[in-house]
Length: 119
Image 1: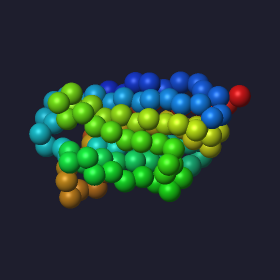
Image 2: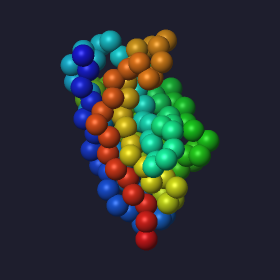
Image 3: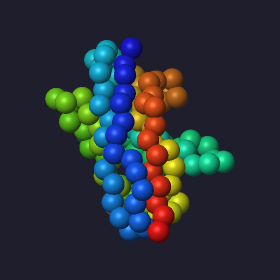
Image 4: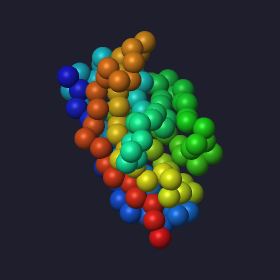
């Protein structure tokens, strides 16, 4: 089992920044990609960004150039730096970790952290 604990959500004005953190514990040797998903009210959950142990990254088109995912393997922690936030970034953000070659949906999930972008 793998446990994921997120932190760093909150309320921010448009154009502002937030940094999310996700600490992994347990059988972390079994996981490789880690990522952040988000789900806004009435919308499907979407993968925002992902990163491998080797620090290869991928991003949804909607966040490219604004969000940066990073990973500290020694601390078993993944981060999501969110800049130039827009109201449409408002959602619950979930940390996700999965086995290489498997689907993110079949992996482990954090409890979610709310991000609200509003003036």
